[in-house]
Amino acid sequence: MKAVRFYGPGKPLIIEEVPKPAPGPGEVLVRVNAAGVCHTDLHFIDGVLNLGVAPITLGHEIAGTIEEVGPGVTEVKVGDRVIVYYYVGCGRCRFCLRGEENLCENPKAEYGFITDGGYAQYVKVPARNAVKLPDNITFEQAAPIGCSVTTAIHATRRAMPNVGDYVVVYGVGAVGFALIQYNKLIGAEVIAVGRTDSKLRLARELGADYVINARVEDAVKRVKEITNGKGADVVYELVGSRETMNNSVRMLARRGRLVFIGYGFDKLEVNPLDLVVKEATITASVGNTLEELIEAVKLVSEGKIKVIVDRVSSLGKINEELDRLRRGEALGRIVIDPWA
Ligand SMILES: NC(=O)c1ccc[n+]([C@@H]2O[C@H](COP(=O)([O-])OP(=O)(O)OC[C@H]3O[C@@H](n4cnc5c(N)ncnc54)[C@H](OP(=O)(O)O)[C@@H]3O)[C@@H](O)[C@H]2O)c1
Ligand SMILES: [Zn+2]
Ligand SMILES: [Zn+2]
Image (tube, rainbow, N blue to C red; front, side):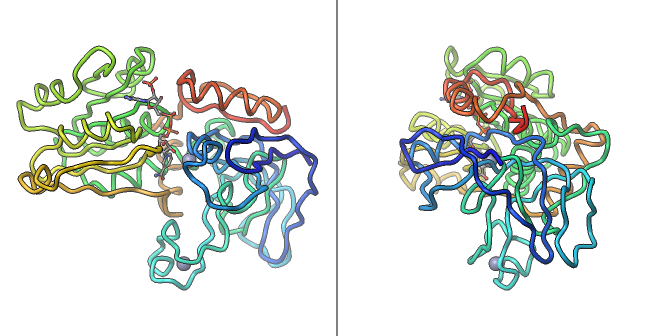
């Protein structure tokens, strides 16, 4: 089968022929129909995120069809349309025991991170990780649910905004679009901060109450104005640059929560006093639980969250598409069809 392989930081991804995996007991073989291109893949290539596993097939937003089932599989059958939950926890650590496989201390697999993922024609996963898709969600809409929509749900649960709280979505991209919609659903006042007008227009269409173009406006000043001087109760940080981290801390309200989702090479520098006087919290969000994936699929199926797909492309164009994402040219997720 065809797969796109990562050979380590600084190297372009390479399309190769690799053996088609065979499902063992309890496993299924998924024919990948769509795989979303997450910004995290750029962090692998840049070496910001180095998990030390190479070569490996990247791609952690995976939707497809069950092609084969291994012995003992009863949950799904050949032909079922599914989305993949990308973590396989150990099942025994304190986090797995609470269903928090995203924090597993000894993960068995993590597709597209430490285990071969979705930039391939097939992927093999435990049957439990193949979540059935309703018929009203296409594969290209489904794939980005796997990380972008689920991350939005998980990060929001980490921040716990109240109805009417001001939340800032700092970095309007694929995860940002989902965060805007989910935070509107739970009754927050949403302020989207970005640098590109087309993305900010879409942010508004998706429900953002206020948008700020940080290229032309002072984001901290605008957030203070919008919130009558109070500041943001929650800031979701999706960029992680020196400038955005600084601004995020400065725009927090008393008891405000800054939730890191994005990151890069830059370091956060903060004087504790800036947090102390506000009793502010800096926290973070990683991945999602299986339950959050199931919730995300339901919300998309009910039309409560729209998945924004920039375009569908092919495995052969992966490096080009990653470059477009890096330049900020994608409006929503780029999705790869490994059979195109
Ligand atoms: N923690 C987790 O579980 C998790 C899960 C998924 C993704 N992530 C991370 O979260 C981040 C966002 O992911 P994504 O897939 O949504 O990326 P994305 O689609 O590339 O969106 C990020 C957006 O941030 C905007 N941006 C960049 N620099 C900015 C700045 N200085 N000020 C304001 N906006 C700026 C860009 O739009 P403009 O055109 O406006 O610049 C871009 O569209 C990445 O770092 C990714 O690795 C983390
Ligand atoms: Zn991701
Ligand atoms: Zn575990």
